[in-house]
Length: 270
Length: 270
Image 1 (cartoon, each protein chain N blue to C red):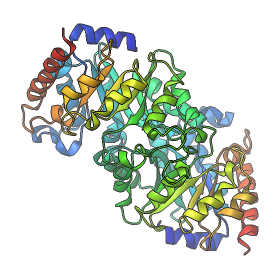
Image 2: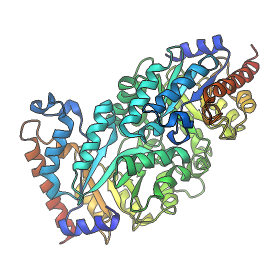
Image 3: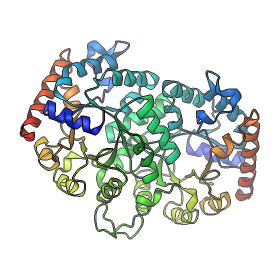
Image 4: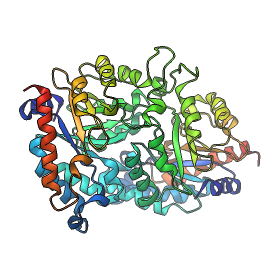
């Protein structure tokens, strides 16, 4: 699925919810935990229960890699189970020198055919470029992240421009691609900063990772982040997938996803 | 293997060479390429031929991930084949918010029991901290990289300190750990910058990735990078593992590794 198709899905479903499948194996409901294919079974049930209330699924690769080969298998099976009507994100935060980034692009666009992948900006243009070279795929670059550590470097002021580093990252990276192949991660705990971000990149989609367990306000994020194409994917992971620790985990996940979707519908004004 | 043991190995073997197993499956010798376990067989032969001339092996995870499950299997088998006398590096350049970085740390310190892993600094302290919490493991943070894109952000001047971003990264990250659990990636194509780097972090090991195919000078790197414990790992990947495209690939790799090792011995003055 490309960005145009994502915009179409948002119009049809009237929400911009991304469900984060950060499937921590230690948090699975007891009745599932012992099953041989527990992670995939959990994801399958979550997808079935939430797909009518979201437009996207994000798999954070860390939770799969930490299970070794079995985890990669679960990631693969989950990806193939997600309906083609949903935009898929490999939240992998990769980045390396050019010829090596090409290998990562191959991994997440071909071997695992995700629609998009998150990429770290520190190594600069040749670390991002190989991802952008794929047609109909989307590169999502870390702009501002929602964690405490974002203060350490992202909020450093630059001498020449007197802007913060993350602002320079947005400005420079945006010039390497188009709103059709380039999104940015924009942390939600600094909702007031979304206005600044929108000012720099009015047309690119923003992936906002920090609503729910990480604490951002959906209302604020929507107020500052939405643009004429929606231009926003708001992710919730734990708040949805671990809404209940019991046998009703999927049902409860569906309920919470639906609440998010309905709130989003009100902000879309449709 | 921890840093103290690495220092001991450098003293015994009188070199600080790291062989980069960036095993690009499209570059394997023809007689190996069709074998079912080609990547591992290639690595095994390279390790046998080079282990007497190096102290470390670095696996860039991108080249394994891009082969899917089969690639992860090859990475696992290769890691377990490396003698315990050699310091192992997962060149993964990971980094995420705290609870997610913990999953990556688990991946590369437990599931795949590497001695060290490379980490990207953009997301700040809580993205690095989970790696540092492992005893007898080493976290290698990107300081200055050797690619062209390092100019895009790493060389931005900061307002408050009037230093470059990479200098602030070195200064700040160094305060989160000790030379016993924290190394830095220091790009070799800017050998003159190694003096600056050594000034900021006199005691930490530097992993220099850019000698050989990427073009740095071993003499310059050694001149500015060596400290009283050597404090240096110089990596060469393609220049060693793809020294010959034929059936003699391993033999030739051994010859090139030995040349590096002998040159290093002269710089160590032992």
